[in-house]
Length: 495
Image 1 (cartoon, rainbow, N blue to C red):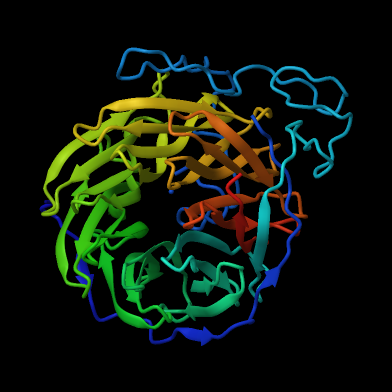
Image 2: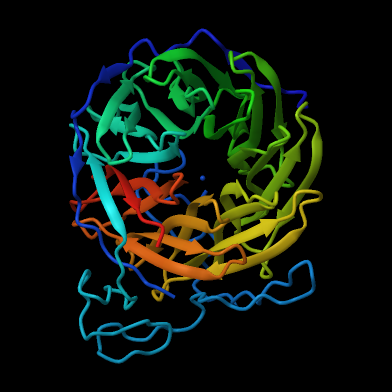
């Protein structure tokens, strides 16, 4: 365990939570877009909440970097290229199907059977919910979970006054109708955000995020709510520097113990991964701070318990100038490290994992982003076996446009199909929500895109799957041009 462990304060509470019943403050029936069949670089609404959109990797030198070569899996076989955007694209809208295009109907219009980036359209959406704050600025859903009744809990932040985002929790029935909504402003006027939620077997909710403290810096925030959204306990974790710290993911085991990951500030421009565990009553069990090879930005982004109480934590570590590696660690139920593995693309540039889940055979799935050129990232998915963390397979996916595509959330259904969500870039100012369903080997089953009417930066941050393999996706959608994102939640059928 870390010798410079952060401190926690169990006295902070959610007494300012506002609670509303059914029917308040949400809209059903957003027109959903299209589909192509076949954690930070963080977009607006993610990370520290300060980014206003996609950006090119810091490795941009004006010269393209060579594309990654296919990865060799642990059994010695080479994985095929799976649609990575590594070549100059065809001209979408010229009426000719070329290059990576699935279709080309001679226009750049969404929703007409051929999307505006020349991917085929497909729509298995069931319903949509959009929630807007009163300030008309950026807000987002960041985490989502489904309980044993297929009720849905979504968390994020909402803004009713400029520069004052509030914690946001909403519970919905499986048909998308509101059960209750909870909003809180623990910092009393500063910036508070939630990024993750997990539901225990008894229906209680564990949430994680960040709240501003009296110094104007953020602290990791962890809380447990009952099934009606009322606080049972809460605490904050302050890193050794008293700078900006943040919680990014949370999980709950069979005994109700809570596992959390995120980051703490340990120096100027230097964040370390932070992992902690608590009992169901909020008593600290153990915590650890992990420093990457370079004194730079290391963050925990995903967490999951297995059936034996072991805890998996994923994220990234910085290993050199503008160079991150995906990072995965397994702890036993006492918080002792069992193994750690990192993944680096062949060109050894900026790779990151933003989420994880576990398959029924114990393999851990990581999803994130990897560079192709200086202005183009693709998202990747990989599985690692649970005994030593050895890579089983990895696949890379890229949209036709030579722009960034990132995966921020991953989940699996009862058949071990994998659903990955994030965004695909269309141009410098426009991205669409991107959803991919893969089989257990990484073969793509279908792909869907969703776009806001503002034709601005839309993204999905999290995904959960219900007992019927329906897919619930949470994120941010922009129905107006500019930095006016809304909380977005959508349910999709399994096929």
